[in-house]
Image 1 (cartoon, rainbow, N blue to C red):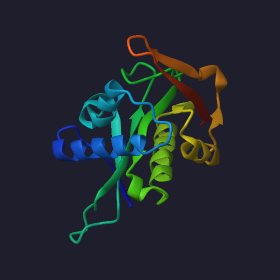
Image 2: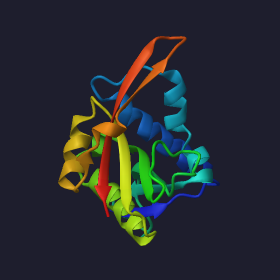
Image 3: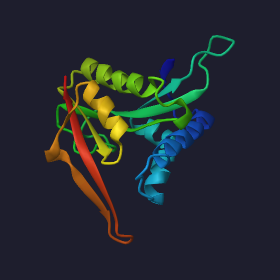
Length: 176
C-alpha cells in the first residue's frame, strides 16, 4: 500500500476519491441521507485546498507508481482551519476517512489514521481528535485499537432545521 498527499489540481483523482469516500459512507448501515453532506464528502479537491488530504493506493502499478486509489482521509492541522470541528488550540483532527467498500479490512483505514497520528506528532500537537457517527462501529473499534478514547464532552448532535435531519456525532481523542 502506498500513501501520499493529494494536490487539489489532480482533478480526476480527487473526483475518484470523492466517489470512494461517498460509497464508503453510504454503505454503512445507519448512514443518514443528507445531500449537503454527501456533496462535502465528494469534494476532495476543496478539502485539499485548505487542509491535507492523504490517499491510500493498493500496491503499485507495472511502472512502480501507485496502484488504484482505495481511500483517503483529510488531516486538519489546527483549530483555526476552516474544516476544524471542536479542535483544541494545541490539537489537530482528521475527517472524512473513507475506504472503498471493496478494499475495507485491508489495513488502509489503519494506515491513514496512523499517518494522521504521526503527522500530528511531528507537528507538535498535544491531541488528535475525530468525530464519528454513532453508527460507525468498525471505525470506533479501529480508533480504540490506536489509542483513541471516547470524549463524551465533545459529542454533538447536528440538526438540519429545514429537513429535521438529526445526526449524532461522537467525539474521540488521542493524546500525543
